[in-house]
Every structure is written in structure tokens, then in C-alpha cells.
Amino acid sequence: MSPDSAFLPVVNSLLGTDLYKFTMLQPMLHRMPANQAEYRFVCRNVPERPLSEIRDEVERQIEHLCSLRFTEDELSYLGGLRYIKSDFIDFLRIFQLQRRYITVSADGDLLSIVARGPQIHVMLFEIFVLAIVNEIHFRRLDAAGVLDEGRRRLREKIALLKAFGAQSAGRRHPFEFFDFGVRRRYSAAWQEEVVAIFAKEVPAFFKGTSNVYLARKYGLVPIGTMAHEYLQTFQAMGVQLKGFQKAALENWVQEYRGDLGVALTDVVGMDAFIADFDLYFAKLFDGLRHDSGDPVAWGEKALAHYERLKINAHTKRLVFSDGLDLPAALKLYDHFADRIQTGFGIGTNLTNDVGLRPLSIVMKLVSCNGQPVAKLSDSPGKTLCDDETFLAYLRQVFRVPGAS
Image (cartoon, rainbow, N blue to C red; front, side, top):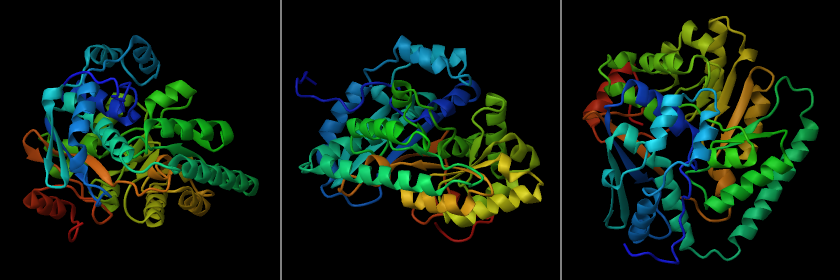
């Protein structure tokens, strides 16, 4: 396509993604570099205007994305994280997203985006694609007063936190929250403004961001460990399906040797996870992350499991990250603060709370090495898999009733 002086890139740095894309990519490079995978974009709600209308601009943005490379300064920052290995930095030094591995098309009002190819070369598309679709979508809506409304709501959040701080003295564990808002942000500029203001105004509570670019720029802790795709990959790795979670957790332990110790629990539901999370893993991992289902019930199950294993829950952490806003996070904190350490990853309600209706979009791993993979969510509507036979088999193996 011809150069266009009016073109405004959404992504300007390959660091501008969630930390867990790097922390998952490293063990995949080391242990399963030949994997072939397919990731598929899905919009779960009905946008104000059809997403098919932005296909051409999304393609232009992806072409720009595929021109980017990591700079030496960026690699130096990543290499300074103690859990990132030197050979992984060498891989990133020559890494470039490849346009031939991703297709964009329109299907009626729907936007279709599929990334298919070597997993270590396509998995980084996910967060960038979601950020691109979001920002291009919101650019075409009437933006009059949007940022003014966003700033008003941001001031309310700051006031809420400062008032809470005056009331929270004496709790066993502190309240800590993180920005998890890259994928569904209103814009990159707005996410940066939000992060900078939280870091300045409420540093006692705001403890980091999943956005590696912003963590580096503002001297914050980059936050993240694993996502569903990491565990789902092991459904297609030749291990018995019943043992895929244990295989995934064991590989993580061997890769990170005690770092990045928060495990995701909801690939086949909390009950099935707990059955695999034995004393060995419960001692090795620092805590658990919630991403679907009732968060209070989930937390109580986690506490009961630690009690059964005679593990002091005060040495562990529960991280909540499912559709939170600050009032919900504070309510959960109040419930658990005196029994276990907590953390709260908040996305859309930090970086896209500007008065417009957010998109509910995902780009999920749907197959690996020619086999379907799936998540049996604890929340209705979060399962993404086209193969009903595999879903039925997964439910049978893990004794998960019904459809989700």
C-alpha cells in the first residue's frame, strides 16, 4: 500500500503488549518450538457499527505491525528481568511478525482475523490485534467529550482509593491492583495517561501494569505469568489429556525455577484444577489467578485447598482478574484481606471507562498441531471451540457437566 502521511499507527513498539506473551513464549521456544497453531478473533457483543467496516484500516495497521523490530534498548530492558534468558533475547533480536501468517477478511458485518502458523511466530499477534481493532473502532465514533468524561471518571477512582486508604488501616494484607488493560483500551494514549496518573496519585495501591512498554517507561513492575493458551497448548502435546494441566505446570516450574509463580486455574474449571494442584505444586507456586466464575466461591475453594494441604494461606496470593472494576475489587479485598494476600488485575474498567460501550473481543488459540484445544470456563459464554466432540470429551475426562 502507498505511504499515507495521515496514517497514525496504533502500535509503535513490540514491547507494547502484555508481559505474559513473553513469559509464555520463552518456554514454548525452549520446549515446543515446532508447534503449529491457529488463533482466531471473535467479538462477543454487537458493536455500534459493524467491525467489517474497519477491515482495510486493520490490515494497514497489521502491515505496520509486521514492520516493527525490537530495539537494543528494549532488549536490554527485557534481558534485565531475571527470569528472561539470554537465548530468548537472541531470538527476539531477530524476531519479526510475519504478514503471511495472518489473514483479515469481512463476513457480512463481522470481522474475521485468523493467525495460523508456527506458534512461536503467531502467538504475539493476539494482544496487538485486539488493541488495533479497539482503537480503530473507537476512532470512528463521535469522540466529542469522551476524554473529558474519562478523566472525570478517573478522578472519581482516585478519590475512591484515597478515601479507602484512610479506612483500611489494620488489615492483615494490603490492597494492591494492576493495570491489565492493553487489549480493550480506548487508545494507547489513554492507557498511558491512566497508568501515569495512577502511578503518581496512588502509588501505595497501584503496583504495576501488564503493558511492558509502559512498565519500562514509568519504572513500574511488569505484571503477568501465564494465560489460557499456555495450558491449552498441552492438550495437544501428546500427553494424556487427563494430565495436561500437571504437564503445563511442571514445564513452568522447570523453566522459571520459582519465579512467576501465579498459576491460572480455569482452563477446565476450578474443581478440576484443584484436583491436579497437589502439595508439590501448591508449595512451589506463590498463588492462583481467577478469571471466570464466582470470585468469592473460587477464593473459598482455594483457601480450603491450602488448609487441606496444611499450607499457611498468608504466604500465598489470590489474583482476581475477571471483569473487575475498583468497587468490585475493593469488595473482594474486604472479604479476603485478613486471610490471604490478594491482587487485582483490572482491564477494561481502567483503560476504556470513557462513557462509550466497550467491545467484548478476544483472539484465542483454537487448535495446536492439527488438534482442537478448548477452555471449559466457569463462566457461561467464555468457551471458544468449534469441535463439539472434543468439548464433550474434555467434559467427560474432567467430569465437567453441561455446556458453558
